[in-house]
Amino acid sequence: MVLASILNSDLLNLAKVADTVRESGADALHYDVMDGRFVDNISFGLPVLSSLRPYTKQPIDVHLMIAEPLRFIERFVKAGADLLSFHIESDSDPKETLRCIHACGIPAGIAVSPDTPVSAVYPYLSGMQKDDFILLMTVYPGLGGQKFMPEILPKIRALSAFLSKEQLPLHIEVDGGINAETGMQCRKAGADYLVAGSYVLGSPDPAAAVASLNTPIL
Ligand code: DX5
Ligand code: ZN
Image (cartoon, rainbow, N blue to C red; front, side, top):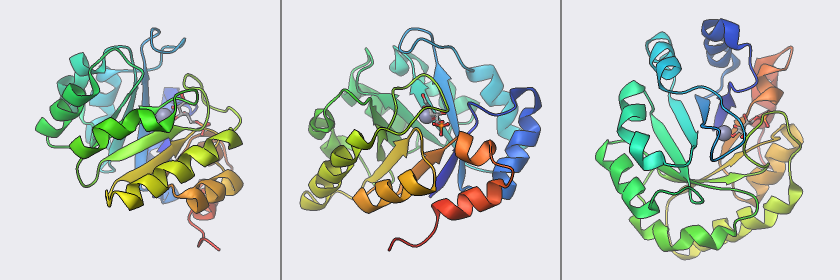
């Protein structure tokens, strides 16, 4: 599945961006929330999500890069999130945050920054459900348009092996610097949700970019 990140898109024309995401064939729209505390940047938050929500029928995957995600879960679900991820490095208790997202009735994701070992999420996997996912950052969170970090590939492989061993039907999402080549590397390593921002929305042919992320794995 391909999720188009709108962080680096033409935010003055968000409706047009949503049209482009839909027409590109991307499966969902990825919405990056930053609070200037968890990362050194501020993006967009609840009011923009509420405005976008009625405009598009596509699922919206909200990626919270904020210090206290638990405080905001219910509000982001009300504003229109269909999937919601938070960082394991945040100040909120992961177990409680997962429970809160599940209580709101949508899939939850735990996001992992590049310097955090993937084993940090293992204690929480038993509290996760079908359709939940682990988001492995393939760049440092905070900005779109960065270069993919190939050193994350072993983390994807390790998580994928662990999920198979434990028979946990969770998804692996990757986010940051994803293009046809790095997307294929991630899929070969075990990722099945690819977030791509600049590669899709910065392309003269977004549909071709999405198609290139969906080519069969050889
Ligand atoms: C980075 C964000 C990503 C970013 C991806 O902090 O979480 O979702 O927008 O953008 P690209 O694909 O341009 O790296
Ligand atoms: Zn993201």
